[in-house]
Image (cartoon, rainbow, N blue to C red; front, side):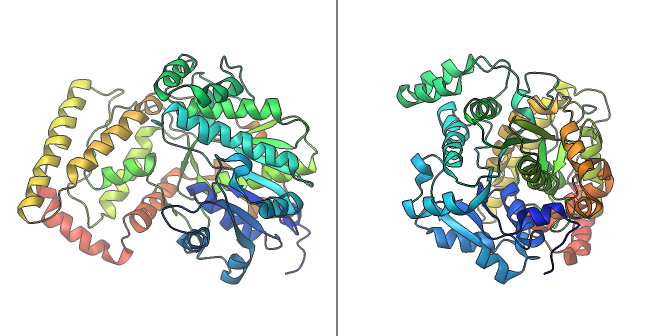
Amino acid sequence: MERNESSLLVNFYRGKSVFITGATGFLGKVLVEKLIRTCTGINKVYILLRSKNGISTQQRLDEFLSSKCFDYCNKATLTSKVIAIDGDVTLPLLGISDKDINTLKNDVSVVFHSAASVRFDEPLKDCLKYNVLATKLVLELCHEIKNLKAFIHVSTAYAYCNLPETDEVLYPMKASANRLLEAAKWMDEDTLQVVGERLFEGRPNTYTFTKALAEHYINENKGQLPVAIVRPSIITATSKEPIPGWIDSINGPAGACLLGALGIARTMNFHPYKIGDFIPVDIVSNAAIAAAWQTATKNETELKVYNVTSGNVNPLTWKQFLEYGREMAVKYPSYKTIRPPAHVLQKKKVNLLSHYATKYFSEIFFAYFLDMFLILIGQKPIMVKVVNKMHNAFNLLEFFAQRQWSFPCNNLLAMYNSLPPKDRELFPMNVREVNWHAYSHDFYMGIRRHLLKEDDSNIEKARRWVKKFVRLILI
């Protein structure tokens, strides 16, 4: 391929190797795919993988590369340039062998750290290990890399959700990352949880707390390393690449959409007119790729933060999001639908009496009813388990669905505006250009195709199923 002089980003990655943690996650897959497919001159993409459950690192790599996310990559390029590094983000030196450590030290120019525990109900001891200790260990490796041009840490816009506005800066914390990491070595899990929760400062869970701690650890220990923090809000399906609507995670809004579309979810304690800050995963990936370029080429010594968010520039309320999703579920139903999707709340707030009545009668009772029916026909009962998991997830999401925040993204917009037209075309990250109604169509169809594993060819069959049987079930 000829050198593309008009693309600053493609040329920046030409001949360079990158190291990625968290590559098997939702964002990680899209990041790897974009680097391989668009930055064709990239040398190697090293990804940290650990063998588990008797599956070797090479087997995990083969499984990783078989994802449909990579269907639009050149297969020969993909298999030759994506290299698995056996390791574990929670072990000293990341559990990497001396040989592989030397390879990374001598060959890598850019590091993307996206590995994290995203469970909101993770015990603090575990969350400190996966979100703070892992960041510490990756940063220590970065200090040893001979030609490091940029280290990009993926955080979250909700790290300071105890504040109504989070600008692209770090805010003071009472807690110390180093002290909590030391305490975690000797303190039992329950005691650490009690001590830690006193330092949350209004945050609802260990996830947001430890992501803020990791940011502070980086800021205090980066020295002169070229470091930037990318803070996405609620990551959702792809907007454009590799295909519109690609998704492989049921976390967050995708799970709520799926359960609502199938008629399982009937109510949620949320504020309909609050802005839900959704951001397509490919925009986050492009922003991380561009942030590494800017950090390297601008010789950034001060820690720079990029809020990759939508609420301040292209707002979408929870009501709009759910209405768009319901519209698509009615128009393109799944053959797995068990009831018509519930209507979206039109009032300004949820009536709690109605909410709990619906939750217990139309969700819990209905789940037991269906499980009894499944038992009678010789099938395995699953609905009570599904509904219990749904309620647990919705309880964890309530804090975020009942509030809204201001996330200015001026650094992101300034970086985007500094790019030449070719890079804006190759690496779209201007959330102002997202048409949420059209995007919701792609999002829903992505859920149908990639999570429910249904082909578009069965839409007519599903419509007949809903018309003949499902619409009769009203509870």
